[in-house]
Length: 373
Image (tube, rainbow, N blue to C red; front, side, top):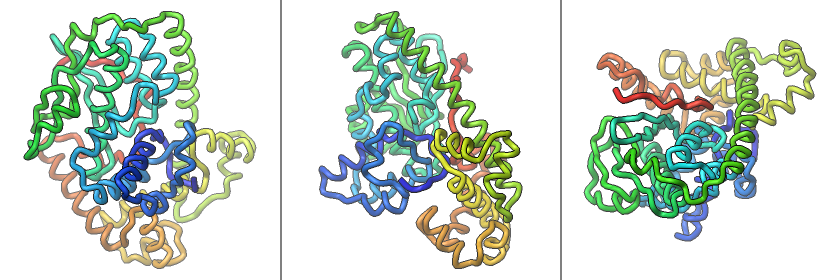
């Protein structure tokens, strides 16, 4: 796989998406190429892609496949074992509640493209999902896949004894809603305030038929150690990304960042690789972010935007935007201005945000349960 933006999303969904497209005789190779992802890299469990790459491939596949239930099918195909060590921890947990909690707590390690949080209510536990791709159609596919996957995982963990009591979707009711009830294994409430997967408290207390306290303790220890390492890597990436953005249009040599981090250039390269990225990828990502911000919030010419982001000229900027988002800077400006206006409207109506400004943010390692509101 070529150098990419900050990569945190696991390969599981894209693997199944490519497989499904192949089965239906639809090629997604062009979308993979434009996203900088190759089929071979998807076979490696260590592979991570960025949300931008995920968005590009899912959007292209959704258009080509023309299947409104695409996300449901992708989620249904993924058993709990796709999560590796985390899946084993879920299988060996004492109760269904413990399996759900460990899945949400270590969601970043699973490379989920969806951010999860738990809400405890009087008689139910809600798994609330949020997406940040900035593309409503892609978000719907990811939400559907996430909830169908959660239904499949809890079915696997409980040997079929536990299932959701309902699913809430924050979208208009489609013409055929029964496909969602079949795909999610529960009644579905549309036009809800949040996207949420609900399970009754009694079901969460069911004993896990595969429970093993020693296996659970061992896998939990592995997950804790890996989580600590991920936090360190994220902090390093965040520090370097912030400095790159602050220095644009100038691009400092990697040795300058290595000196600031009190390590050798070789060590810094290795640690960035461990984080699933590279110095070139971080530069590219910060240029993309600044470009989008300037296109949305200023009347600068393309030559001026190119100069402000470190490109040689407008032609280089056009090539970059084609690679980033598959469109021209002019079209990207139109979309970005519209998205910014929606965001301002949301703030004026009391909403915290529309999510697009968190396009490449990562979910926390810890995801505590919060009480009902």
